[in-house]
Length: 95
Image (cartoon, rainbow, N blue to C red; front, side):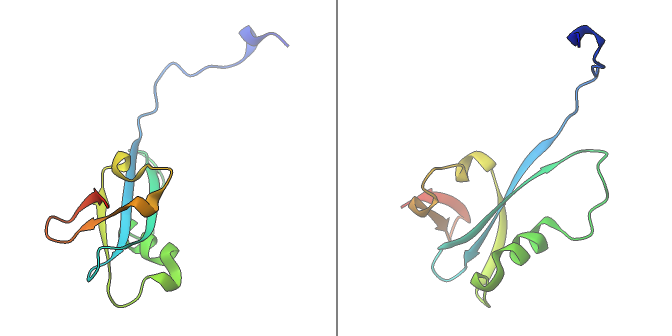
């Protein structure tokens, strides 16, 4: 089959990468990192990204859990145990 016969899109599909961190609000320990990709004209969401992150955190997300949206690059590490949340600034920091 010739590749010239395959249909190709002439428009780019824009998307936005997002990351939500579930963390312990007393220690700053990261409990879960939730990555998602959002498309401008995608399917309407049934739950907020924060609620979804908490749901996927499962039993780790206890009464002290909070969720913040962060730059996806700030939590894109091979060893996520080397990062935490600075509670005063509500930002990702390296330990």
